[in-house]
Length: 92
Image 1 (tube, rainbow, N blue to C red):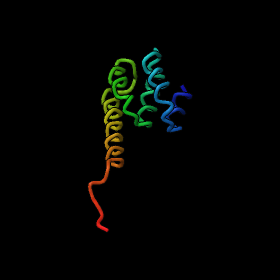
Image 2: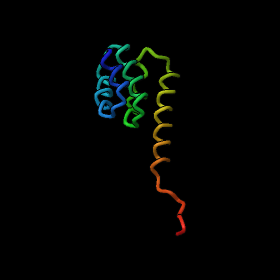
Image 3: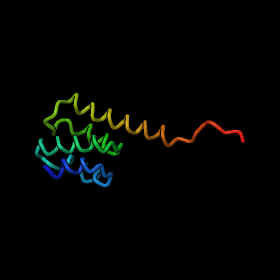
């Protein structure tokens, strides 16, 4: 379980797929709960659907799970705003 925690703390996107696998395949609710927390820290949109499906597997309240999903969506929106092409043109 501590490994699952540290995967989120590292903030390395390479951890997303292994954490999703843990969430989908592990039967221990506390391990799945740590995977939810770590996926929330990573903020990757690939986690949204697996998180929606996992509400019956985790010990955290459903509202916290939904907050994690919304946190990821917000991260994605901010990222899209920061990488979208500028609509302003400079006159030289």
